[in-house]
Length: 135
Image (cartoon, rainbow, N blue to C red; front, side, top):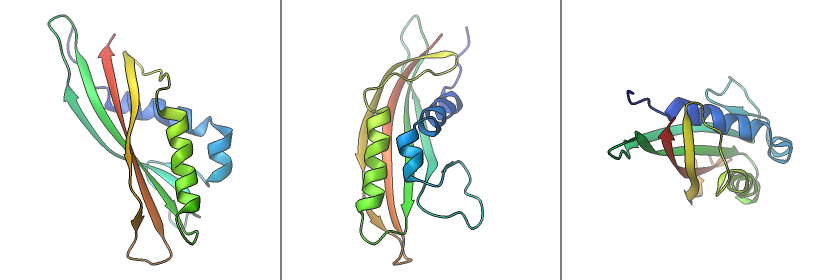
């Protein structure tokens, strides 16, 4: 058996959960890896990922961090935080079906409210830690 990185499989699984959640999709204009030009806000962007080995003598494992970004033009942070909280509800401590891997845990790590240089834009990164074992 050779080690297989879970990053793309995790991104794909999380995208499927997010786009399959009617409550989340009613709050946003879409979930994107690359945002189309002129896309209306609010939306969610699949952001940065980090993977580190979490191996044992008989298995390949990964501890991965996935950051998602909420973008909004609503005055104040209430809209963006509502969307961020929905992401937390659908991912934190939930089962995730990751191709060629077993997801051991999915945990919310943090969110942060940020003001963009454009005063009309609100940005909330939300980060999750996912532990997987290769099947």
